[in-house]
Amino acid sequence: MTGESSAHGENAGGAGGSARLGIWLFLATELLLFGGLFTAYTVFRLKDPGLFHAGSLRLDRMLGAANTVVLITSSLTVALGLDAIRQGKERALKICLSLTLLLAAAFLGIKAFEYAEHFAHREFPGTDLFFSLYFMMTGLHAIHILAGMVLFAGILWGASARKFSADYHTPVEISGLYWHFVDVVWIYLFPLLYLIG
Amino acid sequence: MGGRRTYMLIWAALLLLTAVTLGISFLHLGVGNAVIALSLASVKAALVGLYFMHLRRESALVRAFALAPLLFLALIILGTLSDTLFRK
Image 1 (cartoon, helix red, strand yellow):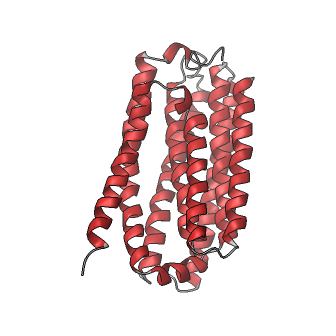
Image 2: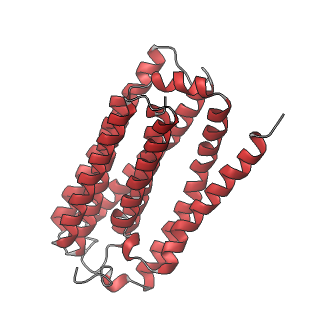
């Protein structure tokens, strides 16, 4: 990277620029998809604060924090991977993608453990409004993590086939933007569900 | 490499903010808890958007595409609340 304005170098406009515009448009629809749930959360929390207080105390905030750290770190590995391939470092990209997949799997593992604990305590999606929203919001988010893993597995496969280089890495960049978005959603889910008691 | 250094710093800042958010959640500040937690979350989201998603260096058009949906989300939430909060 040479300077501020030329950070995107060859693809400041053109195909890379269109692709970025496209993914941001997609992320807009994603924001409004999650937005419906955030709206429901706000409405019902204002209506029955006591239920949400009691509900959030049923969650393990240390596990929530651990998953926040895992996801933030996975965003770092995605950013570093893109930085690597921009300089033509294919091996570094593959290492970063593999680490991202590992971290994503760790996130889902912790989430699955939490779900198992809830089920063991007879806390289900139908238990009350708090748990309905908790399972819906974290479930929809987990599906997005899963989709991201499929995406990055494809990118890793492409990288192994030597498809990406310093000149061409649009799919890496676009998938990365999606991943950071999923990270941002969790950044809000963590305090809203686990911490606001 | 400047880019890599910046990413590491942002990552460290995000971890620090997560630790602060978690720490404050153990204090009993009433409404203050929610306000602080959501403010810190917004700082984290802004860091991810500006640095990891490169909005800091994007064109005005892409920035508009990124920010306009937030306005619509605010409209949806406030519009809904303007109904539900004032129902008898």
